[in-house]
Image (cartoon, rainbow over all chains, first blue to last red; front, side, top):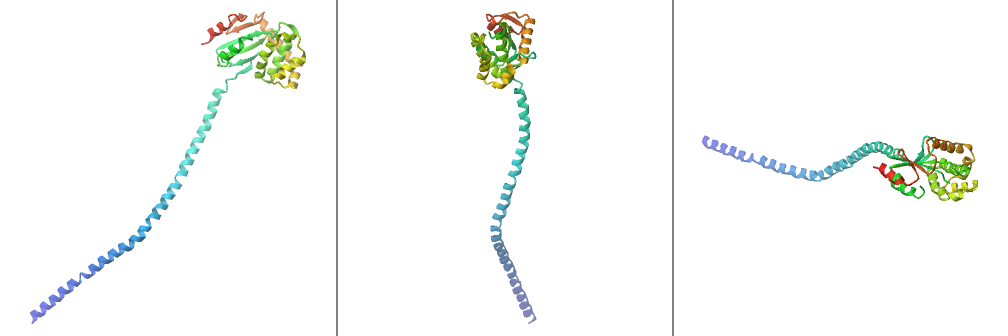
Length: 120
Length: 139
């Protein structure tokens, strides 16, 4: 009789062991529910989350680089202009000799022609 | 020089190869002085206007012998000179003194006739060898 009761007890224990698998099934179900519930918010959240930062970067980056280029170019142009002008300005087409005679043409020309003439 | 000057100016002056100096010669008394003072007084206002007047005076050489003060004023105004400023210069002694000084320097340089030309130190009497001498001095 004792052996029979032991066998029954073992069978009961084995029965409890099978029921012990139920939490696993529940835990798997909750895992899929968590994933399922997490996905919709993450699926909608990323687009605005990624679009907003990229928009901010695009808007924020170009202005600084553009202003930097303009700022660096302006001074060089201003410096170059005065250096170019003096090279062409000395070419005076008219003037006076030290004695006071009027001339036309470059003072540093290779040919100097003095025209001694009377208007009459 | 009147006939050669346009060619010389175009070929050498405007290309930067030549400086052309007009040095007055006063060989015909007061008409020479008056014409040269007119050139000088227009030049005091504008070098460019003076050189515009330069050929006009040569072209009217026959009229200059009997030209009056008003005639010279008209020549000056014709090329853009301010009349009041020109008259003030024309009537002053300073312009006369300047052209007389230039004429004296010309004499001291041994230039006794006109037209004479000095091309880089080579003195020529008349225009006969002028273009060839200029060409020889051009690179």
